[in-house]
Image 1 (tube, rainbow, N blue to C red):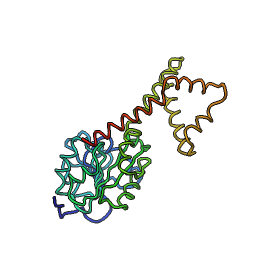
Image 2: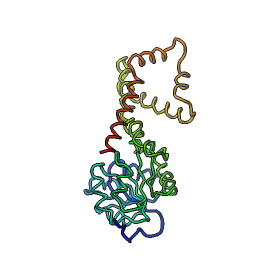
Image 3: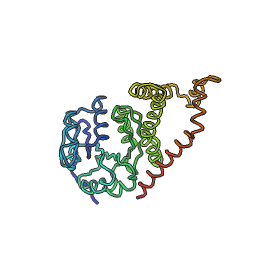
Image 4: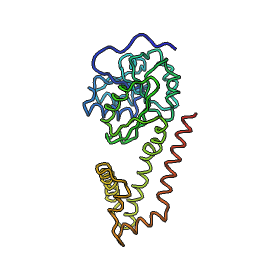
Length: 278
């Protein structure tokens, strides 16, 4: 499959999104708010106007043509549903050039599959984001394809840090990140809900309990990140002999919290790997 000769013109970096869903919007919003790219240099494509309206609100260009995104932008995020992506790549392959940096955020589609669907020597990277990118507090890992350069990864990392934490990893870590952090958002929400409902059971109003639970998770996360401590150390710091916390932790251990959480990450990771094989 030969690459087309046309390429995005010289000048400032133009960033495109094929697919305009919530994750694409979150990344675009982070880039624009952090001043990484000007809104008018961002273009998004989607079949309908429903999602494109949010990009227009940000001041971005929009189109119904995926080819137009490739012909206009050098760095292009493919943010479609995983089952749609192969047909989208087949559609736009003729517009891909050696100047493009192509980034897939679709879960479960390997770099080798992406490279098979694109022209030879296409510069491809794979990114696994999570939903808190929406509030610029996400965590992302990325892996490079065979022909992506180190400078491509550095550029992408610099851009994505506007949306949260971003690190380059071997590709086999990407599916683990999906189980840990992608699915982990739901696991944390389930724990936050249970934490708050425990307080409701003891007589606290629901709204107040849920706000306090969420803030407790946020504050704890910041302490762990800023201190670099292992969670076990911070947990020990909270416990006093014969105090309230050790009694609560004993109850969690009886309920199998840690084993159940480890099982959840394992199950989600295995499912991500299964999707990759399919």
